[in-house]
Length: 440
Image (cartoon, rainbow, N blue to C red; front, side):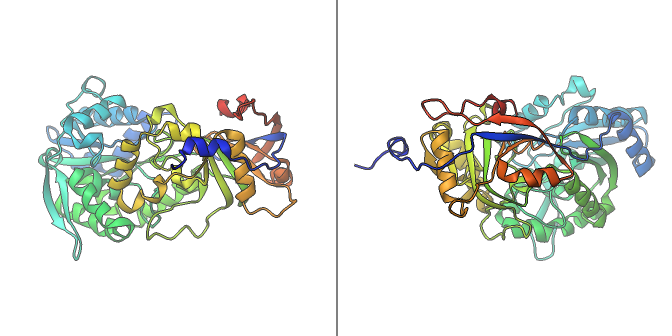
C-alpha cells in the first residue's frame, strides 16, 4: 500500500543547523503618495483633454476592473463626480474578463465588494457579459467590446499599470491589456490566454490601435502604486497613447516603485503565507524572481534563491493554493488546507501560466522539518553559514528577518536598517513559536 503524504512527511527527518536568532530588518522604500485622490483624478481628466471631448448630456461608460487597486472606490467616485459636474451622464461597467464566475451577477458582486455600488457612486452599474466584435488584429485574434460600453458616447478605463506576474514585456498590466481582456469579457480572456504568453507580448500593442480606431474608448485614468500599495500617481492616458511608449514609460516607473527583496542571492527564502488575496499568483513573481510558466524563459535578472519555503495559506485564499508550486518546500498544514477543485480549475483556466505553479512541492510534517529540508537542498557549501530571509508574504517586504550570514550586506545597504534581534524557536510539534513572523 502506498504511504499517504501525511504518513511520509511525519516519518522523515533531515536534521540541519538552523539559526537560533535572526536580525529584524526594516526596508525603507521610496514611496511617493497621492494624498488628494479626488483632486488628482479631476486634474488628470481636465489636463488630459477628456472633458473637451465630452458634451453635456452625453453618456460615458466608466470601466472598473476586478483587481485590488488602492482607493479604487474613491477614484471611481471622483471620476463619476467630475463627469456629472461637467454635465455628462456616466455609468459604471465591469471590465474584468471572466472574473466573478463569468456572470453579470458575479461581476456586480465583485464591484460591490470593492465599494463600487450605485449608492456610493451616484450612478448606474450596467453589467453584462455580452460583447460585440470591434475588429481583428492582422494575423491575430478578433477583438471585442462590452455592449453596454459600446452603446455609450464615450468609454474610459480606470487602470492600474504594474508589472505582470505571468509574463514580461514592454506592456504588462495596464490599459492595453484591460481593453483586450477587460472590455473583451470572457471572450477576450479566453482568446488571449489561448495564445499563451507570446500572445500578450505580440498582440497588446496592435490591439490598442484597433480599440483607438474602431471604438469609443477615449483613454484611461492611469494609476501607479508604491511599494506599500498606496496610490503613487494618477494621470491621463489618451486612447492614441495606450499601448505605445507612453504606457511603457509608466510601466517602467511602476517597476521602479514596486516592493523587492534587497538581496541578489540568498540560500533560503521563507514565506509565512501564500494566497490569492496577496497576489493572483499566490506570491508575487516579480518579488521572488520566479515565473515558472511553460514556454516562457525565466527573467534575466532572476534572484539567486537556493530554496523557497511556504509555511501556510492565508485564510482569505479559501483553499486556493495557486502559486504553491513556486516554492520548493511546504508544510503538511498548508497542503491540508488546499481546495484542489479551486486550485486546479484556476491552473487549467490559466493554461500555460498555471500548471507548474500549482504542483505540490516537497511536503514536510511541520515548519522545523520544512526549514531543515530547505537547508539540505539549497546548494549551500557544506560547513558554510546558510543565509536565511523570512517574510510574512510578498506584500510585506518592508519588514524582513534575516540570518547573521547577511549582516554585512544589511549594514552596507542604503535601504536597510537593523532594528533588533528575534529568536527562531519551535514547539515540541515542530511548529514555529515566533510571533514576530505572524505580525508581519
